[in-house]
Length: 473
Ligand code: FAD
Ligand code: 2HG
Ligand code: ZN
Image 1: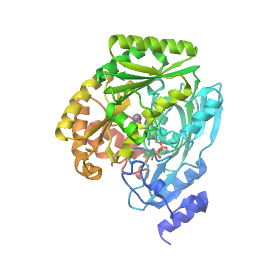
Image 2: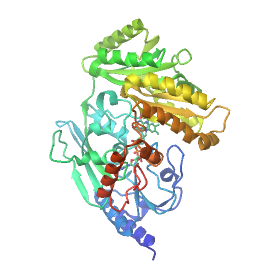
Image 3: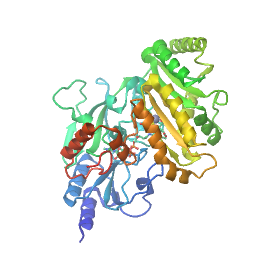
């Protein structure tokens, strides 16, 4: 019996034979969301409990077989799919999808790692609470993946990244031990905060099996406005006004370039996209209010009046109903899907200090369009957090696959050089995965890289947890 056959038999005993998939159509697990790379696994293993995850990890350690944790497989950087070797175990957390406990007094919810984000939001809403993490992939991404990537999304300007929402974790270590850190404490200075090592580690240090997350009271009113702005400078000016007029009521502030919106209008003609033909940029913003809808509307209208007076808004609509608000947000959330429909593309998920974003966009746009004539810039994102999706689509007349093959490396080099010049980050919210491993080595200091390698070696000395992702040994 080969070592792999023996391992597969053990895995069947641990999770049950139907939960060890070795044949049939495994594309959903083995192909990344962006269709960049198709991997091949030794098996897709679907444990149903933390104890089963621990037993699977222990069996893989003995067999020296590496593991790739996976949630909803919606990641953007090819980090949750196996490599092409056919020797890795793909560890899917999807069956672990129970809400363990909602503690109304402590304002926390404890959930299995495989819970789909939207199901957590719904469970909280049912009891009058808000779980504010919000991404367009929320119908399929899992809280384990959100924690693994420290996902951002559209409410970070008020509530922070996934890291800020997490009060505790349960983790299966790379040795197969179970660490229960589900305390739900808001204060706990008893040495190193282990939770923060695992958050954002993209499955390279251990497997997150459960989490305790913060809740907020559901706001009385959430009002959305969609505004035409004449320039990126004006968008940043509007953001300043929004902070001033709405204070902590400002729960979302997204910018969208004209070409990005044109892709939504083209691929989803049923969506009515306001203003896009008349203005280079639009902003969608949200005001959440704990007093009343009337108060929320007054604040938002005062903000828009001031912005129009200053000339940083040229036109605006305020949603009259929840359905209208959803439709306006849907336009923004449809951009990545419209971009995928348009063809293979190059993504830059970058962050820069908010005040310097207009200058960054002006200089980088000019350099890119000069060096790559016809390249189409799909710029949009979380301006409130200084996080742009500064994406590039092949020229309309070009073959997208050829363009990617030949131009992706020089385009990345150009964009990231500007990001460095502006002291920015080459990955604001999507992580490193395998797509940006080399880039990380180029852009992080030797001291930072060495500290990261030491952490990896200390927690996963045999390099069996998602090897080759984030940091190479
Ligand atoms: P996966 O893709 O399965 O995994 C992502 C990484 O986490 C991998 O490295 C994997 O190994 C690791 N991982 C998964 N589960 C675990 C676990 N239990 N323990 C340890 N490691 C684990 N991202 C944002 O940040 N902001 C956005 O606004 C946003 N919008 C998106 C919109 C669309 C349309 C799409 C398709 C994606 C978007 N994303 C966004 C990216 C993606 O949805 C997030 O990164 C999300 O957090 C991934 O969750 P997942 O469950 O799909 O994880
Ligand atoms: C978003 O903000 C996501 O919509 C996806 O982070 C970004 O596709 C992208 O580049
Ligand atoms: Zn984003």
